[in-house]
Length: 386
Image 1: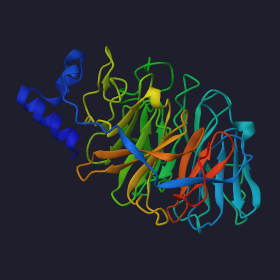
Image 2 (image 1 turned 90 degrees about the vertical axis):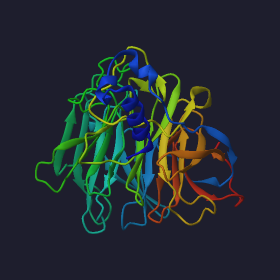
Image 3 (image 1 turned 120 degrees about the horizontal axis):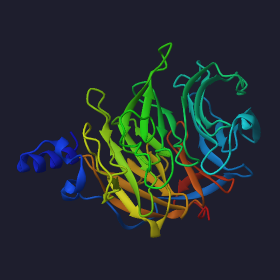
Image 4 (image 1 turned 135 degrees about the vertical axis):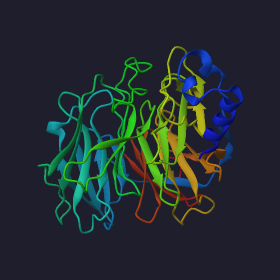
């Protein structure tokens, strides 16, 4: 179990009550919170270098398994493939995508065996603003058939914001999806703490089944725009966008044989208590491992644990940033499941929407200004993305 649970269990045992007893009221104010890492200095582990421009609000960049090309997703509804200097529109769903507020084409994932199994998965806002996830097939030329092979998920969205975004395959072979709380300030419908709601959750589905069901993996999220798995440890690293004060990073080991763990929203924003909001009693409460206040940014973009080899000194550090500030940070995970040594990197990416990787683990960045960047060794002649 994580250290967060150990601290909570000790506290509750000393008070002679069960964890469920802290689901309501001001008792939540008395919970002991483990140390949450904050910025402790600066670093210069890498620079960033623009390598492609002219995209329309790109929100994902990376490679597909077994494919050397760079794939790009644009918020208004296009998927593009960059093969050297050749730029191809692989799919255009703009006539099926509602663009507005935080709506659009939000997530893409490639089948883990994409080299032989050409299936592609997309998450978008339909013309009514509701969540859609569907399975498509790409040809050998990289073009994606616009007719879905099958529809996988529909979720009614009550607002234009907090639609979530991330779609990716986990080490267990399931497809993972992040959904926000449905929008509005301070989760007015209390969906994130409602175990019967899909909103405010991270879900997963086994697509090997003819009719895959979406299981709740984590609860208590506000808007998990981007998250990733650390393949070495099977842990999820999540950037959960905050309300007015705190942006948070969560580090969680999913445990399928236990109730879904709870990241605390809307009873907590980061480690800060929100009065009048209750906490669901069924799952382990997991505190953020790192956070930063809004003067330093306003919308966290979750990243990745670096697993490449080109950037000396960055190995196994988690890289993340902020959409508003363009700032990038790196931190070190501890063996106890927490975080330490949060460093603001010298490099910046304005309008940071996504941190992706190549197939060999090197860092790629998408910017809302229409450019794509790659990380290069510090001092290699590249400058800030600003």
